[in-house]
Length: 433
Image 1: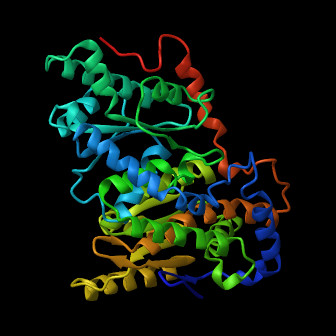
Image 2 (image 1 turned 180 degrees about the vertical axis):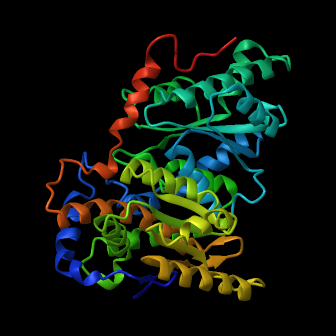
């Protein structure tokens, strides 16, 4: 079975979709009844169209932040969805190749902090800083922010600036992406009190792993040099996926097909599954997709990896007939000098996977060192929809009742370690001496 769009093609094998055909309206109606409703954490469905209204503002803020300090580099401090979505978006759009414009810091240990400073040439004034946290009190993010903030003040004081002047200059390096409500966000209060530039938002009811089109990602793309025209194309393509994914038109609803694919495997007792991405374009996509699996499907058995480098290590287990697996392979269309060998490699993997288990091949259109803006938008929104559809399909086919809010958009279990983090001698954001 082959399903196509203008920039993304999916070919399935080894799965019988006919037993699901009478339930298509049920699947779609369940999703539609929740989409964009307050408290359902599905506001990412129409987020691309909402962000189209803010493109000019985001580009203006990126330009103003560069001008305010003269620093061309942006360092992003955030964890989870505040980091992996941005890494994914930069990578698939071919904007992370040299790693000179955008840096990341999301760690908590001294060696990692030293490595981060080394990449800045041990000069914190050489970078601006985007601080991303919905609550503004995320332990890891706040810790890094306070360290850098203090170091900026000391750096300007060493240049002969007064304490007040140094603080003013340090504050010019920061922009916050957080909740718009200062009562909910400590970071928003910090930004307002210190006169940080502008206002960027993490929108309500948009979980971190679903936030690839929220302000932190779009601001980073603008800062790294994505053209405004390409961003608009990408957002429009993502919104078109939302329309298709809430439609009962089977041929155009790729997200539902992929959701059914993964749900079908589980129904057959196949616990382990594999989704591989071919090529350097997707080297950061695997981290974002793995986060999506762990937090939404809550599946620790699914393998998400980049090939061909992971292929050498995984092939023995993947093609061992004693292991029952299902597979997906996402590949860039290749029209360059490597096309002949690339196509041959993809054909060999596809044939092997098709014999071993159910399989789908997802091919996305490329441009230069990344995907086309349209395929980048489509692929990203498709992954979010398919993930949620997996839960919906499973519950309906098993006759299970639905919770008030879908499990796939919540992450209640992460609070376990956060509760431990808040107690004892641990003080979030404390600067060690």
